[in-house]
Image 1 (tube, rainbow, N blue to C red):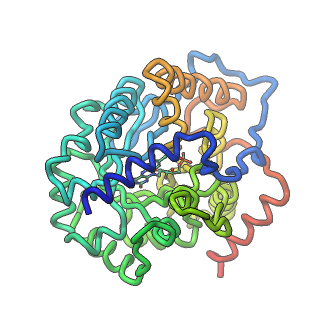
Image 2 (spheres, rainbow, N blue to C red; image 1 turned 45 degrees about the horizontal axis):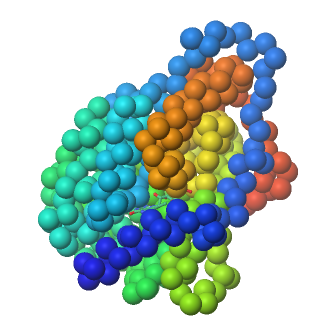
Length: 361
Ligand SMILES: Cc1cc2nc3c(=O)[nH]c(=O)nc-3n(C[C@H](O)[C@H](O)[C@H](O)COP(=O)(O)O)c2cc1C
């Protein structure tokens, strides 16, 4: 089993980094959302701050390097590089799934990122499927052994369906998650998708259960159905790009928060945006839709694969470009971005309306 998982993790890195693998989805549709230019911004660039607070710590910008790797030598090397960059630039970071470490404690070092990132939040990651395999106490013990600041549970039903030996039984995911939350008490549990998306109806349910934040992880970025299918001789592409494009989800969250103060209150500060966010502009748009953090995985991995300089340049550019975009829309800090009048193309607005209808009944 160890070798199977390790082999899969190594293959994930290879496939994701292969520019010809086609695992980058059809697009997050973030280009359908526009930021409003202010010809008279009435701000001085030096007064525009990207700084924010996340899980009780200060970040240079509301940006997270999403969960990716660990469990292989190359994964360990990349984790170290990504983590040191997160710490130096001031981003949060998630580990790859700690499943390997639960099975093989000798790989714990791969996931112990806190030693490289003492100044920023580190989130330990586990799949919902593993909440069936391991007790909440075992998972919490492993999380605490990493000195992690939170546990980040991933929901990856579509991926499981196309993964070799994947789990097709999702009937106890919700019960297991509720058990996990109960055992964790005040320790923060966050939930993420891996690129098929969490629409508002489900996010509200998760928050009601006691999840502290929801990462909507929509489709349009790394396509996990495609990643898993790519190991088959003749992959069936019918399910590629399965799920909700990130922009559609974000616009739905924005409309919901703008329409109803009760929903706004429940969602405020609780949404992380990810899935195909490639640039600072995508991230600022996500914050404009009401997310309080923006996360990305593959863009950071691609930069890291080019070497340390490339990774740091990318990270610094995200901060600098976020600040520029904020100045140009007249937002002095990240919280102010959501008060601005963003625009979206009409087809995005109507698909987002369908997602809101699910909530309003
Ligand atoms: C190489 C690689 C490995 C990943 N491994 C994990 C993982 O172990 N746990 C997890 O929750 N998500 C994992 N993800 C998914 C990402 O965290 C993210 O949700 C998804 O890739 C969408 O973001 P992106 O479009 O910015 O890549 C992985 C992504 C990549 C690229």
